[in-house]
Image 1 (cartoon, helix red, strand yellow):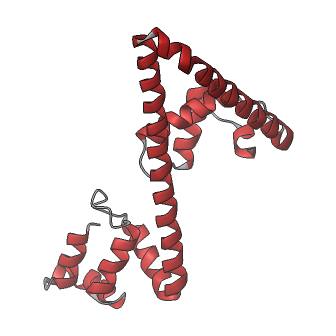
Image 2 (cartoon, one colour):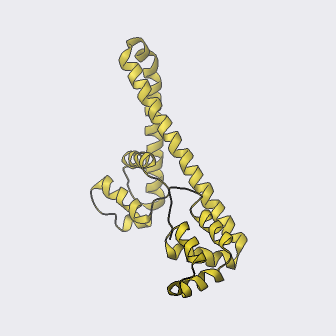
Image 3 (cartoon, one colour):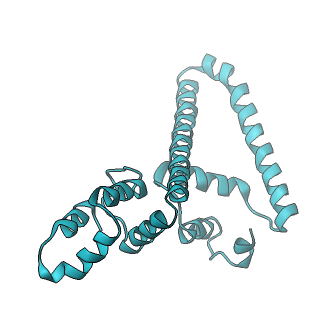
Length: 188
């Protein structure tokens, strides 16, 4: 349902929409409905519509406990903002690495100056990957290609908006290993 559809339904006078209009008016004033719609969509103009089930469920939660609903939405806002900031940081880091590579190719003297830093960063990334792989092996008894997984997550950070569903997340593992995620994935 879009915000415009919600407004039209609330204001409609046609007999065919009487039951839906009565139901929606029971949920609250038009201002309340629009406010909840904006909360759910995170005031994001790119999200023009919301699933009807999600909207109705949100309205029910809003009326059951307004403050708990608002806190939940605020936490979702915070998670979205955090993810956007992380995505920007990832893009900046990639641009910095690319700029350094271009500078190194263009000037042999710059290459001599920047090579130790690149080597140290590479070594640190490998150390962190090993630490994560060991931790996953100890905690869950699985051996995962952490470098490949990190590469996929960095790629997703640059290309996806919002949060991944479980199916989208499982598809990352299919991409990594060329096979469908099984019980070992669900365990992790």
